[in-house]
Figure 1 (cartoon, rainbow, N blue to C red):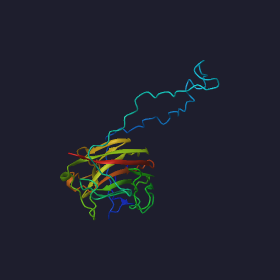
Figure 2: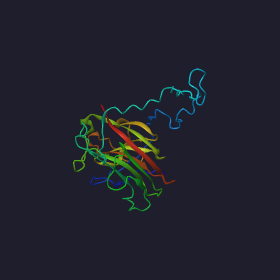
Figure 3: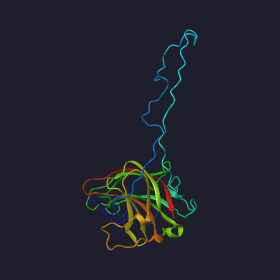
Figure 4: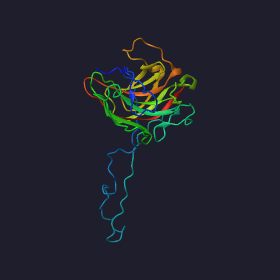
Length: 275
């Protein structure tokens, strides 16, 4: 059984006074990632594999004893095209995972953080977060990366990453309508996308435990529009999405009572998609 994220998570690296709460949903959009222009298994050509290597010079073309000149082969073919960057306003963190006030034209500012069910479960039968560690969520080459494994305990709900949109301080709601934002685009990479999906959720003031979200299940570029999100089927009663009161964007990792769920992924290139 996949966790419904009904509890308020404790943020292990969050600077905000209270941790955000996850929500849940169904599988959503997928994307395609970029590829290297040169295949990783391409052999290094130093001339040794050229058909002319070691062939003696034709008579009259080289002095006796002089080896023939070897011309390296010319690469052919078209390299794979890189993924098109997200279109909109980039929300770029500094080296410590902080989106500094004034760093974008929309006024989004706050910290990236990680959280898990360990706060609710008093560190017993809860998620094991192996990255990030400590109180600072470092930006690693432009990527916000996390790894770990959920617990399969019936009372566990999982873990996740989040970004504050308006860390006053204190943490305040952000009016995405006034800012002209209709969603967010990002690139997802890593060796272990959670088997239970990653739920891209938007908690709002008054709705931290049952936020609107969309699930993604593959690496690559994803665009999640507010109009494509919904509350989980288990959320009752339902409530309307409040785009003027968004507090966070979360990347939730649900647990599963059938088995622990490992994860190892990065989010980069977060971009606000404009109306």
